Every structure is written in structure tokens, then in C-alpha cells.
Amino acid sequence: MTFTAFALIILAGLIHACWNIVAKKAGGDSRFAFFTSVIMMLVWAPLGWYLGRDAVPQWGAVEWGFVAASGLLHVAYFVILLRGYRVADLTVVYPLARGSGPLLSSLVAITLLGEQISALGALGIVGVVGGVFLIAGGPGLLRAAHDPAARARVHKGMLYGLLTGAFIASYTVVDGYAVKFLLMSPILVDYMGNFVRVGLLAPVVLRDLPTARTLWLAQWRFALAVAVVSPVAYVLVLYAMQQAPLSHVAPAREVSMLFAALIGGHLLGEGDRVARIFGALCIAAGVTALALG
Image (cartoon, rainbow, N blue to C red; front, top):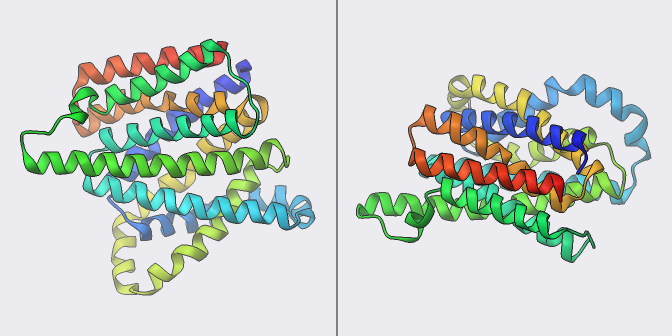
């Protein structure tokens, strides 16, 4: 992994952790995802037009197919993530989502895309996944909680976290292939996917406009923050994918758990702090191993 790709991933991790904390505090649903996508379309329209005025007309069915698939997968990912945040703790949902996603995408990249990974890189993946597991609660996740309500909340968090991770792996492979093998612009892949997301989510909003209006008034500030910041994090990752193997980049993205552990745990008061910090150190070691291996 090049130093540039490594630096891009570190910066993207910080940004990613911050916008997930904002999304958690918003407490939104699929309508929040719609608000965010619409604002993304408007805020990033000048850049999208500038980069796309020459490139987009040259896209064929393959390129548009990848954009459509990316948009669909991102909708499913974001809606499920928001649902998980409403019914469980961020320190369960987020780590499991971020830990299972890169593990699956790395396995796909190695087994189906023919990428190679050294023993040190493989140890890095183990470190990242193990650290995420500790941050999510460690062995306590495998034991039944004494409080039935707490147990149900943890189990819901695990379910939504793992389901979100599956969609993270899916869109990582799709988008990674688009920018690495089809040589599509990372910014355009993400930006044009907004049109797909808006089209898929619009019926949910139109079905109950009064409720959507009420939610908009309460959530627009959170939606604006996510819309402005989250594309930057993901585009940085896509650029990193152009410079380094997907099987390295996907797990290294989980450096965001370092920031989520230190920032989100403090702000939200969730989870055991000692286990969270130790898990963050495991992730740091894993990311370093990936950068070297």
C-alpha cells in the first residue's frame, strides 16, 4: 500500500466516524436517507457537472449498470444502518458492520478478483476484525445479558451490524471494480449514484408528506452535515482503491473505529472504555500491518 493511499484511508476514517455519529444522533429512517441524498445532489452538483460533462456521455450500458447497482446497494446499506442505530447502540452496530464488511470484501477480492495478500497483510485483517470485535463488546456479545431488554438490544445490534456489513462488502466490491477496472471517476461513481438513491427512496417520502415535512424540520441540519461530509470520506477511499489492492484498502478503512471509539464512545457513553481502547489499538496494529504487507 502506498503512503498516499494510506493517508487517504486515515483521513477518510476520521470523516467516516464523525458522520456516523451525526447519523446516530439524528435517529432517522429511510426518509433521512432521502433528505441526505437530495442535499448531496444539490451541494455537489457543480463538481458533478464539471467532471461529468465529458465523461458521462461516453458511458455505456456497463458503466450505467455499475452506477445503478452501486446506488441500490448504498440505499440498502444506509437504510439498514439507520434502522440499526434506532434499535441498538452505535458501539455494537457500527463495529460489527465495519468489521464484517471488509472481511467479506477482502475475501471476494482475493478469491474472485485474483488479488494477492502477504502473511503480514492477512495478520492485519485478523487484527482489524479482532479489534472491532472487542470494541463491540468482546466475549460479552456471545453471552446472554442478564437483562432481557439489554439482551434483545444487543442481539438486534448484532443482526443489523452484520447485515449492514454484508451490504458494505457488496458495494465495496462493485465500486472498487468500477474505479479500478472500468477506470470510472470515483467522484462520479458516488455522485451519480445519488440519482438512483433519490429515485428509490422518493416513494417512501411521497406516501406521507406531512410526516416527511415534520421530520425534515427536525433533521435537516443532521442531513446537511452527512451530505456534505460523507461523500468526501468515501471518494477518498475510492481513490485509495485505485492505488492499492481492494483486499488491503477495505480492512484498512476500519481505522475509523479508532476515531469512533475515542469520539463516539465519549459522546454517547456506550460500551466498556478499556475494551474499546484495546480494540482500537488492535485495529491500529492491523492497519499498520496492511500498509506494510
